[in-house]
Amino acid sequence: MQTLKRFGLFWVDFIVGEDWTLALVVVVALLITWGLSSTGFPAWVAMVVIVPSALVASVARARRAASRRSSLR
Amino acid sequence: MHVALLVLSTFAASLVEMVEALTIILAVGVTRGWRPVVLGAAGAFVGLGGLVVVLGPAVTRMPLDSLRLVVGGLLLVFGLQWLRKAILRAGGLKALHDEDVIYQEELQRLRAAGGGRGREDWYGVTVAFKGVFLEGLEVVFIVLTFGATQGHMGAAALAAVGALVVVALVGLVVHRPLARVPENTLKFVVGIMLTSFGLFWSAEGAGAVWPGNDLFILAVIAGTALVSCTTVAVLRAADAQRAGTLG
Image 1 (cartoon, each protein chain N blue to C red):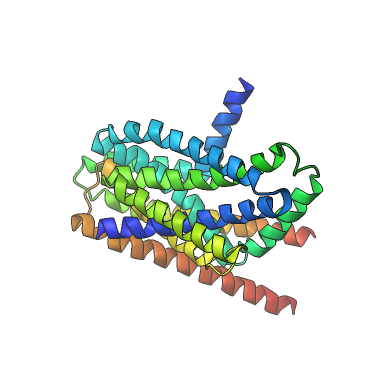
Image 2 (cartoon, rainbow over the protein chains, first blue to last red):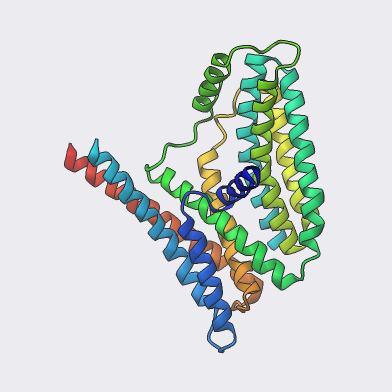
């Protein structure tokens, strides 16, 4: 059981990496795209807006965390 | 055009991973002898080959839309992680990847571990195996996702093998870490490509229709590059401003 858990965690870490919120945003963005694709609205817009915004937000969070760490020193 | 971009991206991604694996292999070889390197690397190649044999046919049998959704989605998540790290490095929030520094650290660690050069140096074998397997795993992931989604597994695999041959030959000649390879820049570019292709294919898999069809990938790549470069510029400006305030 422990080996299986470690195996699973390894793959999560390998693909998802340091910020799991990016993976969550991708899933949500794909669901929105899928929902929009049947409405006639250009569904691709959802991906090109949501995904880059999530990336920038993730970098901004990392920067804030780094600033907090350096101010604590 | 798609195939050319795919081959170039796979080659660049494989090149940086092979360079990293070479650093570990050299450190093991210099400190603990070349036998553990051969055993470890051979074991890693067998393991990676096994993964390709198992996963390759599985992904190529999936229906195209599901393949693009699932594999494109995974590639997008993987690419975002890669690009995020590259942006943090370029923006000064994460240490740059320096093969010389990594090599020296690896040498110290391997020497401190003691033993070695005995009948069978399992520590050296394990380090060499892990180095090659973990770096190679990223290459296998990229080859499988790029190759399967576009139906050009052979071209992607050839690009990866090409990178392996180049790094192995150069490594044999110079016999030290390839610190001159612009690894950080390559990782930045590869991050942009993985993210762009992942975004493009997963959106298609989810039912989106891109304006201009396949040609729109160029706009996605340009947009991703613009967002990434702007983010780096903002990080650097903030860093310079902060340094100015402190100074």
